[in-house]
Structures are given as C-alpha cells and as structure tokens.
Length: 148
Image (cartoon, rainbow, N blue to C red; front, side, top):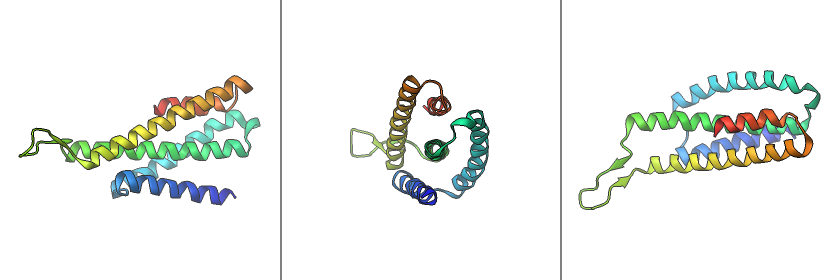
C-alpha cells in the first residue's frame, strides 16, 4: 500500500507538471533531484523530534508535504526561467489590448492552485493542533506557512 501511495504521488507530480508546465526542463529535473535529496533529509531530521508520534498518518502527511515542496520548487524554477527568457505581456499589432503569453497564464494558475493547497493544509494542521494539542502537525503547519 505504501508503494502504491508513492507511485500515486509521483503520478500526480507528473500530471501537475504536464498540465501546468508541459513537463520539466532538464535543468529543472536536475535541480529537483538535488532539492529532493536535501529536503527529505532535513524533514526526516525534523521528524525525529516527534519520534513518539510517528505512525502511518505522519508518513502519509510527510509524503504529501514532500510532493507540495517539490511542486513549489519546480514552479519557482519555471518562474525564473520564464522571467529570463520571455516577455509576459506582448503588444498585438492590430488590437488595442496587450496579450499575455500562455506559459505565463499556466504558471500563474499553477501558483494560485499551490497557494490554495497551502492555505488548506495550514488550516487543517491548525485545526488538528487545536483539537489534539501540540503534535507533529506543528511541523507541517510551519512548513506549509513557509510555502505560502
């Protein structure tokens, strides 16, 4: 069941990047590998503080959290690439209105969607902290707030 969850999250990542970014560029894929390695190590070290609370729910939250951080990282790298290579607004010769390039619109939609997910995650973790007291949800709420 754990491998199925990991495969499902990888599929979600590929679907998300395929829809909003038309896949990853080589530089983004390489940067993601480095980011993933250090991010997972750092989060695992932070989870050791909550050793007594490690269970299946915490593992699932950890995997979803890593997915969210990877999506944020890729969106940040794509934003930097688009900022350096393309103009966001282009003047159309026969129109009074400027045109916004499609990759910029898709990236903006991606960022709005990620922000919505971050807000929902922080709210969920906050409710869990209020109902059950201090727990590992503090770590996930803090990291979710940072991603906002």
